[in-house]
Length: 522
Ligand code: C2O
Ligand code: CU
Ligand code: CU
Image 1 (cartoon, rainbow, N blue to C red):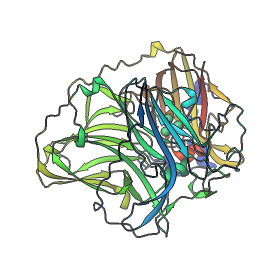
Image 2 (image 1 turned 30 degrees about the vertical axis):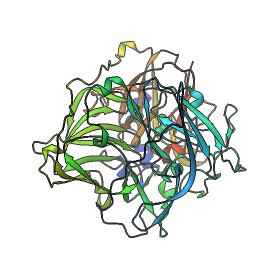
Image 3 (image 1 turned 180 degrees about the vertical axis):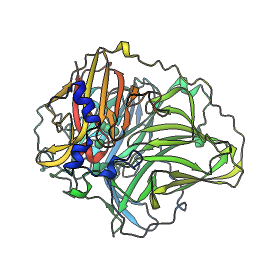
Image 4 (image 1 turned 90 degrees about the horizontal axis):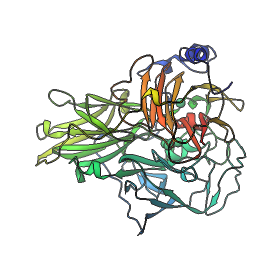
C-alpha cells in the first residue's frame, strides 16, 4: 500500500479500528480517548516510596568547555548508578552518567557543538528533539555512534543494511545551528529499534534555547523557572529499571515481550528522575517547562487544590516556543515528547498550602505526579504580557501539497507491530519528498493513541476530526497527539536544510516496532 491514501481510504481508516479489534491486534481498552495512551502496566517488585518525600532535583546546566564562534560541550554517555528510590541504587545509562542528563542552555542563532563520547556497551544515536538541525547532525536512526570499546553486534535489530548510514566510532561532534525561536527542546537516544529501552534507562536531557524576544518579556526566571521532565518507570526486585525487552542486552533483537507491544507503562512517576518529588516555592509566579519524557504514558495534569477561581495553568508556550498570547487552562494534557510551557502563580494560594500536581489519566500510584509547598511570601516582579510573540500561522492557501499518513497496527517482519501507511520503517524507502521552501499539509489518522512527531520542522495544527484544533493545540508544535480514530491536519514549511529526516510515533515502543518513516527535503 502506498503512503498516499485516497480520501476515501483515509476516512475509512479513521473509523476502521474495528478491523484491528476483530483481528485481536488491539483491545477495546485502547480505544478510549481518556486512557493513559496505548500501553500495558508493568508493576514494580520493590515497595514503592511514600510520595512527596524526595526533593525535586533540577538537572545541572552544563558549561561549555570552549566558546569561540560556537559553544562547545562534551558529554560522555556512560553507565552509572543513581539513588532514585530512597536507599536503592538503580543502574542507569546517563549523559555524563546522570538522569536526566545535564541541561544545555543556548541562544538562538548561536551554534552549539556537542562532542558525544559513547562509553556504553551498545551503539547510540543523539537526536535534538525540536531542533532545526541539518540532516547529518539530526540523529538519523542508523547514524550510529559506536562504543569506544568496540562493537560486534552488527548493524542493528531488524538487521537492515543502510548504505547511507554515517557511522562514527567512539566519539563524534553534533553541530546544532539553532536558527530557531526560543524553546524547550530535549535530546535523547534515537538508535533504530532500541530507542525505547535506551531512553528508559536514562538517555534524555533538556536543551533550552533562549532569545531576546523572550528575555524582554519579564517572565519568571532563575529559581522560578523549572524544567520538569515527567516519566514513568517500573523497578525489578533488585531496584533496577524493569523493561520487557526481548533482548535485555539491546544487541540484536528489537522490541518487547508480546504483552507490551502496545507500549510500556511504569507504576512510579518520576519528575527529573525523582519519584513523586516535593518542591518548596514562594508565593509567586513560576515558569514550569513541562516535558513528557515517558515512553508511552499520556498525562492530564491538574492542580489540587486549584487556585481560587480556577485557571491554574497559564500556557505561554508549546513544543517550539512562545504562543502569540497566553491561554488559561485548568488542566494540561501531555503526550509523550510534548512540551507545555506554563506559568503557575503560587501567590494565589495562602502560605502553607500544599499544591499537588495530579494526573487525571492515572489510577493508584500514577494518579499523582509531584507536590509544591508554598512556604513563604515573596516579592514578584515577573509579568505575563498579553502579547508574547509574533507567531504568524501558516494558512491553507500557502500549501502546495497534501499528504496522508495512517498510523495503525500492522505486520512487521512477521510480528505484530506498528506501521505508517501500511509499511514498517525502512531506511531506504522515501515516503515524502517535500521541496525546500515549500509549505505542505500533512494529514494523519490513527487507530489508537499515537503521538506523531516530525523532525526538522515545527508545524501548526489546522484541524482535528472535522473540527477546529483544540484549546491545547496552539503555537508551534512538533508532536501532535492523535486519539483513537482521530484525523489531524498539520501545516509546515520545509526550510533551510535538504536531506533525509524521519517522522514517527513517539510512543517509543511503537517507534522501535517500526512506526517510523522517512521524508527527504529536495
Ligand atoms: Cu524525540 Cu525522533 O524524536
Ligand atoms: Cu525529534
Ligand atoms: Cu503509536
